[in-house]
Length: 355
Ligand code: SAH
Image (cartoon, rainbow, N blue to C red; front, side, top):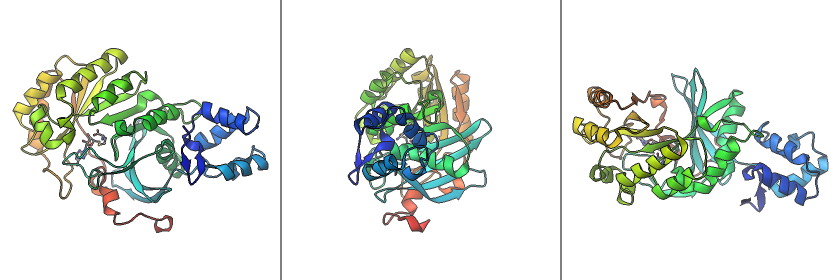
């Protein structure tokens, strides 16, 4: 798959085998493919001109027919806790967000997979304005490359939990995961990659058959269909029972544990009854529940649950032997809920000089 950008080949979206094919097709020596791939995906250069072990002719040829433009940082906000949020500009002027979280065990980056989103979750900022377009593989890779370039530090964990629904951009996302974990590139272990989805069941089953060893996180947010439909339109398409079946299929096939995300909305899904329903749903399953205190978004659904209710909910799960944690809040002072920074900067596409 070689997507064209301004009539140029998007070579950063090509995997290693495709780069080899391409190099062969333009009559360059086969060993040049590894050099070229490494310049792009290991050394993270921004221009062909920097690829100094390639001949000048080859570099000029590449520059004429290919692009390595993906995403560039145009704004950075750093929180008191060290979390940074980056606004990235894509080559067509659209913007997405990425977040860098620094942990003792390494740097984690949360990336966006689409410009906007069409899933319509009622509490989420990313879906305001709908879906503009899906990201190319190069644009997902570059969110990580840019942050690594800027910080000079290795990114060891990647989460697909920013703007967009990853499984609504299936092919590019699977390609992205394979290229990110390619030993000729950044070689990020698939075990350190987490994909979060609102639960597109058919795609989820297909994903299992890709034989990846990533972690799957399911945005469940409600323990019954009725309540889930009030919060997430996708619940009209897939039932919780169907999602659970697909999750069991995933666990059975991969032996990996599933994470369930549960954003807590005051008076809506944070009652003890809800907690008990959740217990009944997950009992005996190899899983982990992540309770997320809602990040209230202006004009969107709901208030954040009270601390005591979150603790009470957690206790019910714990008493029933369900693994549960409350998500540590990072960067809430910098619009870290998905889509908030992008929305703030909207009202037009951004241009390079504005940074
Ligand atoms: N589309 C994917 C990934 C992006 S959202 C998905 O649905 O999983 C990442 C997580 O943040 C999801 O669990 C999402 O439901 C949750 N989320 C979105 N807006 C939120 C908000 N305002 N407060 C708390 N969690 C939110």
